[in-house]
Amino acid sequence: MTILSTPSASLPFLHPERVLGAMSSDAAAGLVAAASDIAIVLDRHGLVQDLSVSSDDLVRSGIGDWRGQAWIDTVESDIRPKVADMLKDAAAGQVSRWREINHPGEFGASVPVRYFALGGGDDGRVIVIGRDLQASAVLQQRLLQVQQSVERDYLRLRQAESRYRLLFQSASEAVLILDAATRRIKEANPAVCRLTGLTDATVAGQAFLGLLDPASVEVATRLLNAATSVSTPDPAPVMLVDGTPCLLAASMFRQDRSASLLVRLMTDQPVVAASDPQATLSAVLDRISDAFVVTDTDLRILTVNPAFLELTHLSSREEATRLSLDQFLGRPQIDLKIMLTQLKEHGTLRNFSTVLRAGFGEMEEVEVSAVSVPDDTQPTYGFSIRNVARRLAPAQVPGTALPQSIEQLTQLIGRVPMKEIVRESTDLIEKLCIEAALNLTSDNRASAADVLGLSRQSLYSKLRRYGLGNLDDIDE
Image (cartoon, rainbow, N blue to C red; front, top):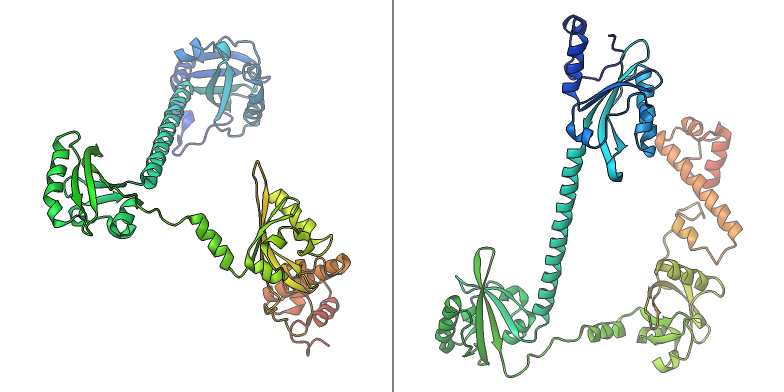
């Protein structure tokens, strides 16, 4: 039998005709059957002439009774292009490659098989050998199920840890986790810091008994020793170093093969809570130099900070809340429409250049950043407005009045007609291309003209126009 195409091997036979040429058909059939789970012989039209199935799993899945059928009809419909490509390569004598093919099995299940096709003679026959992938598919499915189970367990642990952390941090009672052997603090909630005056950075690693008055150390030691042997000893009164009386309670738990103590310090007086973060944020906004405004979706002002009142020459917050932000911010019919579209589509706006009209009619250049805050009851917009009128403008390059970047071009929107902006954009792109060509050719103008597809005269004209390079030696 003449082999028209063979799979590539890292170390192939040197003389296959000599060592395998005398092999009988029975021996060849046995070799193919032993090397594969299924072997199929197709004629030039792709019809199954004969086949051998060595895998009992494939037989039980209904694979095997294909003689006289077109092999492409035995696979699932979406896989048929793969089969057509395999047969085309094999018929052309090209080296094929392994492909995974799914056959329809019993009860609607798919039977995955990995196939390789090679030409088997001058009459157009094709030999297809396959390896059953059902066991691998089962293992992959089990691996996926195990992975999903691990992820679910991990998610439950994360949720439990989050609830523990929330309870631990928000508890008004001072709670500590101690190492049972060394009696040093492993963790402490914020109430411990407020009670003892220590910080989060210094409380971890401290000896717990060092927090107590020397007269209470012996009582605390007995209670902690009892906690390691008794499930829950009775609380005992102790005193802190600063003289604060407390009721000490402790219980032991094990984690990661080590023992820890959960210790509580209970006082008659509630521990003073830390300052309200919302009040702190409000104080910061009242003192910040940038104007800050909160409006509803119709731009009616809900609240402002003093910087906005100063910028617009308004006398009070009450006066501002009776007005609309569009009376002050943006050029009419231009800027506000752009800002609102950006907020509705993306939820944020960053460093938008516009103007702010003060109460007496004067206009100031400003930069606006904004955010949309969705809410079921009352959606709002927050605007941060920065006065940039006194900001130094970037220095212009001598000899040219072109914008130097896309950012400068976008700042012209609303101030210059669009036709002029388009012309400026074209000039800027042309200038940048010429500069890049000159850098690429080490300032060789003839080569730069070739790169840009221009004549020398056109390039020299544009160099004069944009003031690029040394213009003294252009006239030749």
